[in-house]
Image: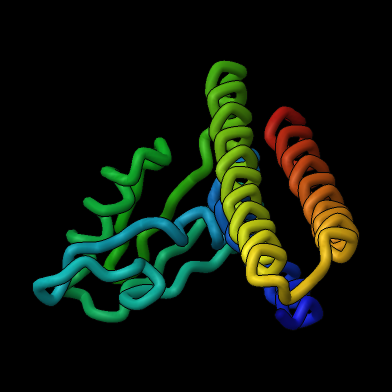
Length: 186
C-alpha cells in the first residue's frame, strides 16, 4: 500500500467537497444580488433541461438587481418560468431579451430558513467527508489484514488521516459560520 498516494487522494477529495460546499453556499441568497444565485436554475428548452448559464448571461448592474440576458428570444418565456418556479422567491420582469430580477429584502423568517439550509449543506459536506475517511481507514485496515503494513503503521496512518479530516471539518464549520453571518446581516 502506498500511503502517500492514499493521503493525497484523501486531501484531493476533501478539497473537492469544500469546493462543492462553496458552490452551494454561493447559490444561497444573502440579501445582495449575486450571479451565482441562479446557478441551480434549469430551463426546459430545446427538448431538455439546461442550466440557465447555457441559454443566458447573468449580470448584476447593482447590488439589488440581477439582469438575465437571454440569447434566443424564443426562450425568454421558458427562462422566466424556470426562475419563477425555482423557489428562490424572485419575480422576473422581462423587457425584450432582458429579464430583470429585483432582490426583495429578506424577512427574518426567510433568513432563518436560509441559515437552516446552509447548515444542511454543511452537514452534507461533513457526511461526505466522513464517507471519504471511512473508505481511507478501510484501505488501511485491509493493508494490515494483508500484512502489507504493521499495526503501528496503521495507528500512525489513522492518526495522520484523522488530522486531515479534523482540519477540513474546521474549514466547513468556518465556512458555515461565515455564511450564516452573511445571511443574518441586514
